[in-house]
Image (cartoon, rainbow, N blue to C red):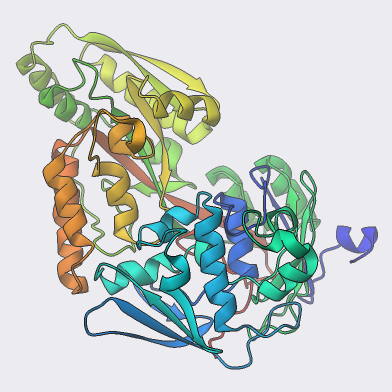
Length: 519
């Protein structure tokens, strides 16, 4: 590890990269446990999966650890052929047994990421029979349902499908490498992947240092990457302009403009799979009225929001699927029209207005959007009280269905339309708390026919027909659902002009820190 003086000096020959961003969400480095933004980015650069997203065209899947794959005629078996001579950062060879054990580990450990593999029908009881090594380089995945191949492959790009070095875990953890711990105590602070980097040093509350994996097939000009916890955008900008960091990750649109005009920085950005939305609790007697739902959709001043708050963080987007995902649409379904909203409220018998509250994440952009919406509602006699709080508090209330309105962001769990369709509309039991993780349940919205259509979409093998099904679902949800889709997040990155290798992808796990070159 470099000395303190070296850590303070970014190297302009591409040797060391220092990034400033908020990393206080980092609690674990275990790919079977971590879900949050920072860990997803780190895992995407430390671990390989069988396949990964094409960063430049995320509707496509590219081989990663697997050089090829094939599917049985009935769609129930997938075979993946590993690239030859793959090695983990330990120097151990990557084998199909490592892949099978990694799947077993994730599913049996059963933390948040396991839900994605569970959607493929894998359980702790059957994963040993369904995720198997046929030989040293051939991994076979067996399903009970002939899902759309695009759905299966997209699930396999997630953190949960990261390939972990079984021998290294067994050597480091002994008996704890087996169930139920599966080496989690060690993997919380260490990594064991075959990606271009490995974490060489991290403790909670400290910077994260990544070093190049000398065995990796992925070329990179960077030897060391350091993530420093610098949450404030102004501080990041100052350090960037002074040359004390190389990358700033949390600048607002004004700060980005200063970086652009500095002559020593460049700014780039790409859309992410995160959607800001407002939702109406359908257990509320007034908010469940169809006229009220439609009236509220016409009380969003999209142009004002874009100009005042969304520049530098997102773009107006009125659908539950982010742009770049199968079935996406760049369609403006509702226009700002207070007069039309007023007539709809009159039809609902609410011409005199009413009082309501909205729980809001205490982020500047979200608060700005909420305040503009509040002013629009006031034009038609609806008195909206904003209840800003921490994400933990707001989400706790939202998950318990104790809100009137809710304003917050939803990030896709994996790059497939089912991830968002499931969240926004699939609710099979509106009374049972077993659906508490679903946004439709949290808002008390029960649409069984749309849920059935979403389930059917999982088995449509033709990608064009599958995309058309999701476009139809978006139209239906936008028209009748209790959601107002506001914008899609755009992630902007400001870098010193010597550095060009940070490639921002549609997910945080596809923010690659290496010079991508496919073998």
